[in-house]
Image (cartoon, rainbow, N blue to C red; front, side):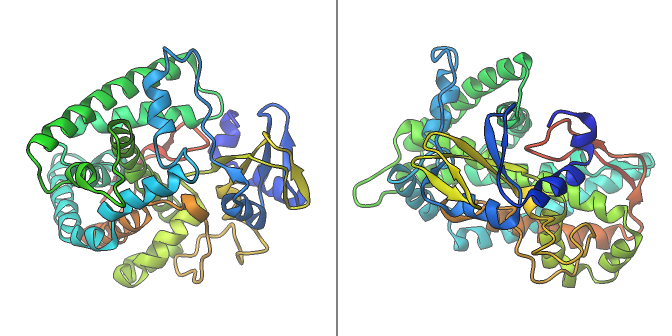
Amino acid sequence: MQDPGFIENPYPALKELRAIGKPVWDEKLNIFLAATHKDANAVLRTRSLGRIFQPKQPATTWETFNWLHADSILDSEPPKHTRLRSLVMKAFNPKKIESLRPDVERLTNMLLDAIEEKLRAGGSFDLIADFAEPLPVKVIASMLGFPDSDEHLLRPWSQSIVKMYEVSPSDEDKAEAIKASEEFAEYVHSLMLERKRNPGTDLITDLAMVEEDGEKLNAHELIATCVLLLNAGHEASVNGFGNGMVATLKNPEQLALLKARPDELAATAVDEFLRFDAPLHLFERTATEDTEIGGVVIAEGQKIAALLGSAGRDETVFENPDQLDLTRDPNPHIGFGAGIHFCIGAPLARMEMTTSLPALVKRYPNLELAAEPVRRPTFVLRGYESVFVSA
């Protein structure tokens, strides 16, 4: 999974895995790989396959990183997961998400205006750095009440932490993750204390005040939740948008379709972005008891990974799965997960992308690639470092 050719295009190899028809044991990774849509979906929904966080060692070195994960919704199981998710959903509800739409529209237009200034001075702009990345970062930072002047800190912290989700992070990656965890946690803690003294209208205030049946988030849980919301609140949007736009810009027929019907196709196009070149390719679980998936027994303590990107190309579920189809409907991809760990931020990510995509295409109807996109050298979180386009 670290081979450059595989990272550039993993789909032929994933197709071979699906052809086996059952989960496959990978000796190098010490994990089963569930490649079909049916098996990957079952992994996500089977309750005896838990999201069990294993603390990194030595514990003193990884202390902050460890509790950021052990106390997060993503890496906990019921009853803790149930309590945390219930509390967070009270502050992160559909009404709250919909109330953000005017802000998303304003920020989208602000970024497009800035791009216009850049185009007057040169010939291209970076679809990632100038548009896909700053929009969700600004939205989630605004939700959490992060000062505008500190926004530049968030993406580097997040990227350093999520590198540890990759298959074999380097020693440099590990050192950066440890440092980012400590700095990010300290920063959020200081904001939490300030909001408790002076409550605002932001999500940190909401999380600090929210209560259900006498239960509240403790300090570690609140900090871990904020860090997770920032990380998960933009990674899928940035990578999903970038991956989908590159695929569309390389497909003249689909690009013409999107330009002709941007508002009408926004929703199905975003789902196709997430299916065709998934922003998250692997989600790991551990068997808490012997569990059968696809005719294979996963013994208690063994790990199995749902290959979400492979599931999105399953020939038994999707017609012409290797073809981009922005009108595809229905589109039962599992890009946002499934089961109790279905992404809390999915409604926000959808709203951001279905708002920003048509706005971009309508502002710049002559959009085209100005250079070959540069892909991030990662598999689990799949995306681009830069996508230069001309308009």
